Amino acid sequence: MNSDRVFEYPFGDIYRLYLAKVERKGHTRDELDTVLSWLTGYTASELADDATAALTLREFFTQAPALNPNRELITGVICGVRVEDIDDTLMREIRYMDKVVDELARGKKIASIMRAPRS
View 1 (cartoon, rainbow, N blue to C red):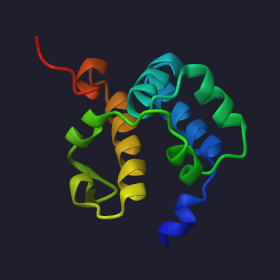
View 2: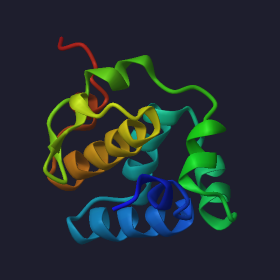
View 3: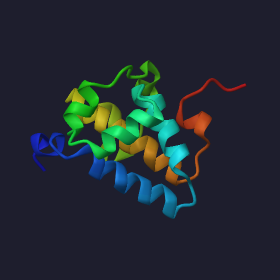
View 4: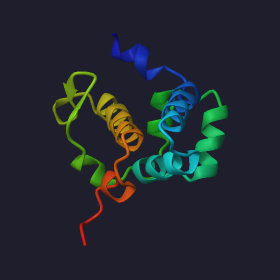
């Protein structure tokens, strides 16, 4: 698939798909918002606003208040590609988001998803 086309997907459509996925697996909007807020710096209310605005994925990440530096600790395979091997910066950000949502849906602890230090 052409990367430029992916970058122009509406964030709201992606958010709704993420929400349906995590709810199907017994998780909540609050949990989804927690991991997305950790990743991007958006608040839950800003995520809700962005989900209803005509914001593209490119705009969503370009306007992100504070991309978490620990997001670079996210590794693994998503859609058959190793996240850490993706050269395109924006595509890597999108795949980081996919990865944390997948981890939430699979039941991984939020502290672990957010790459928090172990105590």
